[in-house]
Picture 1 (cartoon, rainbow, N blue to C red):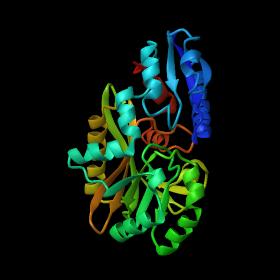
Picture 2 (cartoon, rainbow, N blue to C red):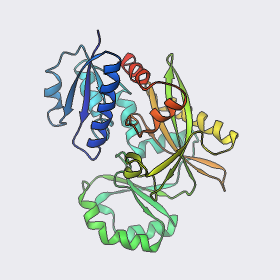
Picture 3 (cartoon, rainbow, N blue to C red):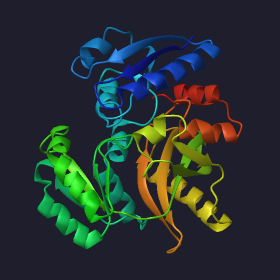
Length: 314
């Protein structure tokens, strides 16, 4: 019988999301009658902690954010000969870093919003004013972070002034050399597509249209009930619907993700263009998460997704 070790927690802004994901996975494993244990991950001691377990355990990676999604934990697990779910360290690192992922898709002629990069320590009012003149409206976000943590939208001089007053406190949350992306704001419809393997062949599930009751699909909108609305399938033309599915599948293959992924887009109706925003190699698995919601729409049981991740563990 397979033994599963659920890796949860981590010391980052997505700790709570990981705990909720782990709870959903534990429920599924109980339904599947699979034996499991849970390890709350401390990145500083993880390598010492993991070798206390037999490497006959399959590690189910329920972590989100840095260390869990960026290839670091995957490297340690591979080094210690543990099989683990989701993508390998190379794919994980490429997906988690938004700068890397944007540069990769550009090589394949997939459009993504124009952007600049800056280190946290160099973010100042003068720079932001220069960017505003160039982009008019822009989004500032960490290059390596999930769940929209640290994301700021600047659409007006009023927004810029408000952010400049809080800039010192904002920068304290990040390391001085942490890289940020300053991305041109594209107005439009937020779309997301989950890709899930069936018989080892990746297939796009659905296109979800996201309407956030906040200004953007931020942390609160993602993980708090009642802060966003999802439309499946998205209210777009059949042509753009198919294009979105095909784009997601193409991007999944480009990054060589394993078992599943979720790709986010923005559709600008005026330009009739679909812009790539980011790819997630470890999408959320909470009760409010998008991939399980799309799977449920396609009548795919949550337990079957979990079993597939376990069977594909390498």
